[in-house]
Length: 365
Image (tube, rainbow, N blue to C red; front, side, top):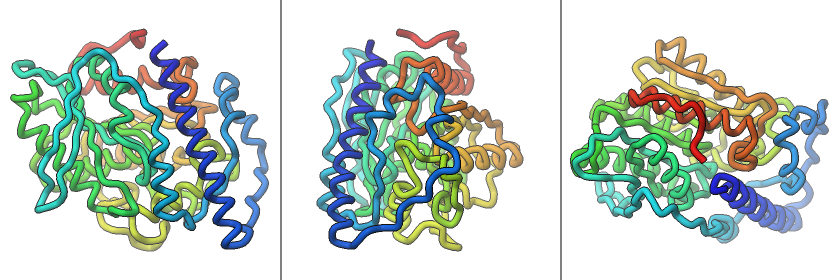
């Protein structure tokens, strides 16, 4: 029941955000004039969606986004966070950490910390296209994960773009990672078993953080769990995708807006800020082992497959899951589907193996 309710919350929040975006875009078009109509897909995208995942898509409007959204309108989008009650257990506490090199303090939520234990830990970064989302909204899901995997989770309320472009959010996330490592004994954490995890832009942040951890050489990372990660600014800009890929939930238009905000420049240019775009990294050797999961019609499918291939070529142990007929966020929108349960089980077991724990045969109710 809890999983089903989480799916309803996530779908309702998505619908509200997209509905408001429809109003924002309509307002922008009224001011800036009509935009060019999108090319009609050569294949009906709905025919590629797995039947068990089709139902909720009828409730999500098809929209177009432009770069004309004002800071006030973006602020409205960020406020559309439906309240989600936390679970009774495991425990959750909030901490404010001093920022790096005089930067602002960083809020983190600490889940399942118990002094005297010797648990593995996850540093988690939330999704939201680099421009929206919050760590607080993911706490109930992370409580369930921490309980199932018997681990500690620290999730970071990093600064969002465009107000804070790269590398501000990286430094927030690294601050939290270093605190987790330094305070391992107090938190009941085995500092030799720390993983990174995130979804969408949070998956991008986890990949960026894994690269920074390798290059800075201060904190050993054993694993990175990347859920349909946002890894390449060229997707949908200098690298067009088939018209039937990325049709649902997260589109090429959204992607261009998110990357422009994060990078502080138009996406798809010849050069990007060093360390900001994982897919542009030339040397992947020595990175932490990875699990990468995505849907076959998610906008990110090609970049995620390519990143997994390059990790493998670099000698990084990597597992890749591509779910047929699955669109962006399918596992949250239809959490009780067979595809979603298998996807989540694979994700959990990737972490379990990295931690040296026994694998799960099924997800807990």
